[in-house]
Amino acid sequence: MPEPLSDAAVSALMPDLRTVMREAADIARPFFRLGGQTSARIWSKAGGSPVTEADVAVDTFLKIRLSALVPEAAWLSEETADDPSRIGHDLVWIVDPIDGTRAFLSGHPDWSIAVALLAGGQPRIGFVHAPVGNADYEAVLGHGATRNGEPIRVDAKETLPGARITGPKPMLDRLSRGADVDFERIDRIPSLALRLARVAEGSVDVGLISGNARDWDIAAADLILREAGGVVCDLKGQATTYNRPDPVHGELLATPVALRDLVLAAWDR
Image (cartoon, rainbow, N blue to C red; front, side, top):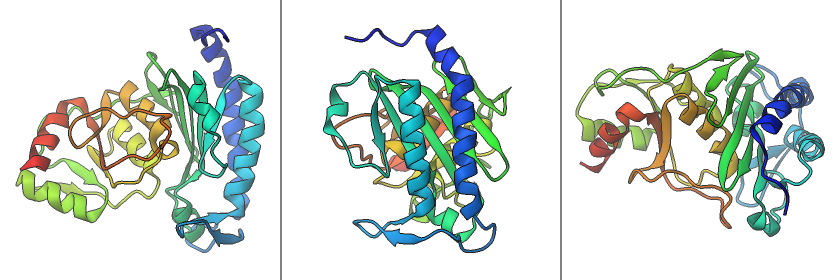
């Protein structure tokens, strides 16, 4: 049985991981057209969701490079056929090569590359890179969260009136009815990883996520948010878990810990 990944080994990984993430962005960036249609070829996966040649190229690159960094880690990615043997692994890379593909292909700036390294079913490393704006959101379990090397923290707000919320309109409407307060609605952020990261940095107070999010959409940003003083949970307050046989999640909430119970109470009304 391989030895658990030590804190020293995790710290040693980070400089190489930063390099890999920026190189991955360099692969995707030439296909992106801000405000316009991507130059990449586009096709539909089973279920009708789009994928571009940029998604596939970034995925292939990350599979090679991340597997070289931690050879004993299994792999779970949006663009790779699932290998059920990952269930028996302590270490697992969870990867979304382009989170927010529809944003990427339509020229919206809010897409990202999201990578988490799981140990024992929970994220040990979380890294979300937003190529438009060159924002690196990082977290290592127990060591806080940063944006471009600077510590980040959720907003200190402890009440719901005036809270900045974002997510799918039906969920926002339900929360607004239950809370019966005035929220500030923020335009929906297409990348789920960025939606959580912006709660972590304090620019959003409540992020709502509709059902059918996958591990690769949220695992990296989940750790970033936790390390910044927030939480990702379902609408009964249960924390997210990862690397299950079916990596699909139901409706989720991302918020500072101080607001969690208030949001859950409003949702249940």
